[in-house]
Length: 260
Ligand SMILES: CC(=O)[C@@H](O)[C@H](O)COP(=O)(O)O
Image (tube, rainbow, N blue to C red; front, side):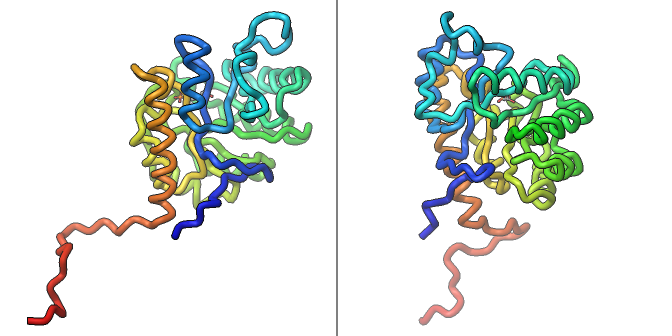
């Protein structure tokens, strides 16, 4: 029987769900809430620069999220320099949001690939300031190792460019990252459909973060449920241990040793 207390642990905090979801691109806040619920996610990421977090007298996306039920993960989406990202995290903390942050420092608008040089700079400062830093990074084991050495609580290599829905473009790099770091590895970005999430989990990653695959689906609530199931199925299959791939057939009902 497989251990059912298979929790995700980040910086000493335990989570039952290994799926983290974003809050952007939904047709309405009501749809977002229903999709989050169907996803089973416990960690919800919010773009600090895109929501009103300071003036609580005005309507905010945050009004729709039950903060007793979910852990909010402020993120620095839209930041292109270390300074910008650091400022954004400080702003989130001052506004009373969590000091566990998803650190995103983008290199350009076309690819939205991370600028790893700026990312490392920002991570160093934020770790020193006591933030629990979860950095979105390229699927580069060397950068992931450096982020771990700086003191990041997890690493979040991309599966594919943000919003692309291309799935896990380089499963081999993800495997090398898993061999390289001890902190949790969360695949972040690029998941298009449930099988992408299952593939990531079957590689042995600790979790998956996604937004567009759910919010952009024809039926976001159904897709959120599919992602929930896929992440759990992928994790279970990883822990169960798949059979090795072989070039030639092996009979499913062996006849050796049969009597008569
Ligand atoms: C929500 C968020 O943080 C995104 O920046 C993230 O990287 C998700 O990417 P997808 O939209 O491709 O799932």
